[in-house]
Image 1 (cartoon, rainbow, N blue to C red):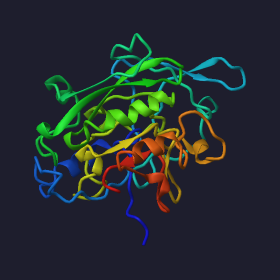
Image 2 (image 1 turned 90 degrees about the vertical axis):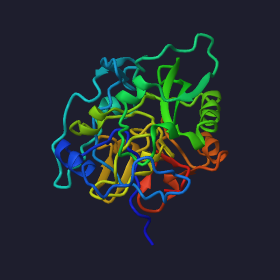
Image 3 (image 1 turned 180 degrees about the vertical axis):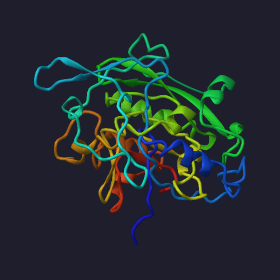
Amino acid sequence: MTRARQSGFLGFLGRTPVLLIAVLGLGTLAACGADPSTTAIPSSAPAASSTVAAPSSTPSGAADPATGGFSNWTVGATPLPLRPDGYGEVEPTPPQLVDRRLHTVDFLPPPTDGEFHSTVQPVPAAVLARSTWQPRCPVASSQLRYLTMSFWGFDGRPHTGEMMVNAQVANAVPGVFGQLFAARFPIEEMRVPSVADLTAHPTGDGNDTASFVCRPTVGLTTWSVHAYGLAIDLNPFCNPYREGTLVVPELASAYLNRSDVRPGMVLPGDATVRAFASIGWTWGGSWTSPKDLMHFTATGH
């Protein structure tokens, strides 16, 4: 049996604002505050690519393999034409992104000692307000936790990221990213997605590593596993989703060649897969169809 379509959400959070708002408004969605320990967690499916610029977004510099220098690339600047299914048109990867190495924009203070640091706390009101959480989400805000974690950027510098996850996994997730930090696995961006991300026109160039986003499975009334904070998408551009002719993010086709190993890629049995396996999570890259190379999940979905 072909696995039901699963998806990471980062870099492809929503289709069009009208469709997404219509889906969110359906009265048959899961009850708000549902407990994931007693609620069946449904399959997720991909949503179309969207802008993922950081809260204080600035143009990013992509490493140019030909020159060893940096050329400008502004994430989210160029909307893609839409396919009939609402995704962006899959286009060739721009030369600046074939070996993607963008600077990380700091919106939290980076660690000053080069060591891994993490915090776990209830989600602050200000963070909740800028997130995608709303009362009809399948988890109550009290069932979520706010994490801060150190990570290495593609710029070779340590940074501090943020993430919202389910309270059930909040104490385990920092251990995973501590292992990735020790392995110096590069991550471009780690921030909490916003409603603006959900409704943005697809641009196909996002690369935000994150977990919780309150959205239903596209076109259905079941919730994505990300709406429970029980899945994480890691460097989506470097680890795209593919099913048939669909590639998400839509500009990431160059990263479908997994034999051309570049920084930020997840590969079978590597440090990332081992780190998530250490807490019992599985990898969407091991699925037959679709291939969801960015997706790690506590539920198998």
